[in-house]
Image 1 (tube, rainbow, N blue to C red):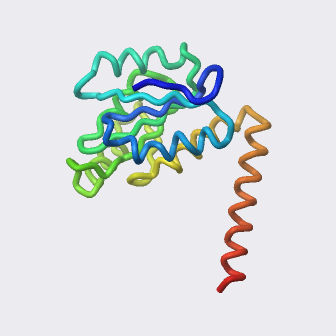
Image 2 (cartoon, rainbow, N blue to C red):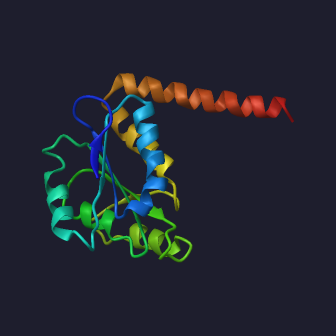
Image 3 (cartoon, rainbow, N blue to C red):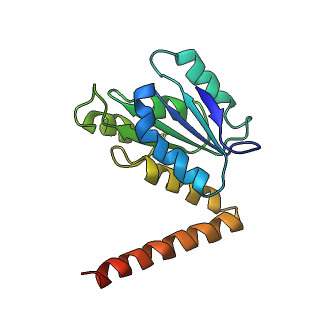
Length: 167
């Protein structure tokens, strides 16, 4: 499964180890697309398709990706192995999958990277935050995106104020 949303090159790649991860990873795809960016979505297994994973990681920058979001459950090697083969920022999403221990094993596999191979890591099943972090990374050099994120944060403040009014 490889696809892009919108027209043109995708600057964010959302990859996952299995079709079963798609339900969680869809949140990253959706928030990035909601901000008007193209998203590349693909299943790449670190264990079942290691050659494909390495090729993807090594060619990601050349293909125009600026940030990679990688979700994985169980042993969760995908984010770290991709990060070991690219200089692009990789954001890992630990997934509570059928073969994980409440997602804690996945979280530890992603967050406990050795020195020299960083992976930014969000909460278990935290794909939406991974998408937002990717947007914030891209907003450093994109004034339009930066303004959209400012509005998003202001809208969150307003939402909390509305919740307080209803108390």
